[in-house]
Image (tube, rainbow, N blue to C red; front, side, top):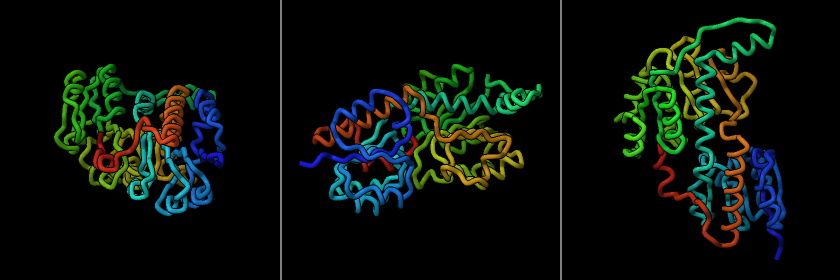
Length: 329
């Protein structure tokens, strides 16, 4: 029997030391490495003669899956977002689609507050000043008693709420699936609609999956319902925010600042409208890239792959009947 060939594309897996490397090497399988995230053409060029695939945010379309089958046995997602994968096609082809929930929620929540504090304390302005030999100063703002609106109270949204309460903030949340026990314990007020969150939030933090319902959720129409000068935080997906609309709102002050770890185009073009605005803090999709989180995600992705390749039950598998609907949880 031929040695299984495994395609590995996620860069944080490859670049971060940890036990996940030995776990994968111990399988004795042939590992084919590429630097993702890959577009459809690059993904197409690599599939067809692989048995397993540990992917990040590669474009895995129906066309890719049709070429990958029948040899491909397992698709193991490093992370939780499957919006770049044709879940319906995987289901139709009987291809197990595995993922790693519960491994990066604390890390992403911490990153959310990095972005928020950087905006409210004018962090980049001040560090740029001192690095250039200056001593320029701007007056910032406290987080205390401000209202943070959280769209999506899943694992990450809950961790953001816990940290917000530690800062003495008021928390308002919206989610289709509401955890009443958690909300009561952490004093999270429930909004009946997203519009209610928009109306009261000093800070709006996005923690939804990308679906047809959430694409361009933040656009001119919804921005108009928000408090003037609102700060928007996005550690979810870039496409949840309409780029042209938020750029215009940032320029005219309707939105006071945008802290984001994601963009609609990654990596962005040199003239992307959000990368050079002074009231934008943008990081290159590294919200979950800590040594601790990477090792948890990578180890879970490898374990999922090994179990499924052996015909055993994986740690976590996407349920196509639930995943598309559970877009705010």
